[in-house]
Image (cartoon, rainbow, N blue to C red; front, side, top):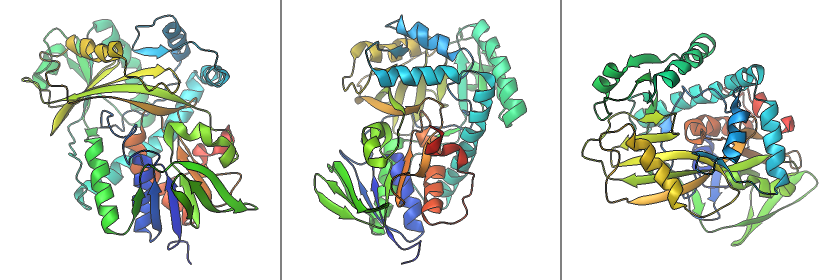
Length: 417
């Protein structure tokens, strides 16, 4: 066996797990992907599909903790924290608060940007050269504001992104905004336009990658729940699942928001909180946007896909709550209604929720388990898992194959916790 023709079992069939499978298979690994439910059925399924190199800033911006405290007292806020006696949540919030400063924000942003920039390059390769079908469209991204005050406030953020990260946005007046995107109401204050962002349909991406991988011999096992790692010393030899034992030379846990529940198996703390997001998918309304839009004042995103139209976003820290709350969905509809001439339509094909794997420093974990020499972890991508998936998958394949990584993995080490 060489490092590029061993076997690997990936626990987690979301976009990070499937992208990792893609790059590992390309290097000659024999890959098996298992998921506790269905492949691509959790947070990777109904998100807004934005691929956004512009989103380099972490959530730990100065003043962000004040917003979190306000959310505790505002049940109807798009950003909501459900108060409860959960030590892990309060510890997470404390660590988050400690990082809400300029120095921590900029440091994290550089590590975020490395994955985002690489991710965009990889998507261009996948869609142009590998014929991955995912309704890829490179039309940019609008941040559209209702009030002049909030539009103006973004000026300082744009200056920071321009000067430190080379990610400038073009400021548009109300007239220019509606001229670019006529689906918007003339009452908007204006926009900031990121011309180089893109979007896709997440479920189609997962279907296309899976189809090609299966054709090349990768095995996918659904409804297969992990129970434990087996092995001797520091070497894992297999995993036990609800569908029997699986052995391999290496193992990758790409289990998203569920990963904290596996901490004792992995031999390290995984300080992730599930950040619940919602979406509604429907046909194109009669006046449909052509460009994806985020309405920061209402925390709503709108994505016009080739075969559908999606309202999404919201952030809710309510634990592992599996309910779809009607009033949270209504926030998406009412938020979009402030900005769009025709904000939504019938029928609503799907209402959805997913748990984003949120770390308190906004950085993912891409590292080897400290307990097992041949067990790896790739999780904690916060709200950017789709944008970071190809770069993470490529980095995972390089680390497992012991080749020089295409970007520095140090910021994503689990030992930082």
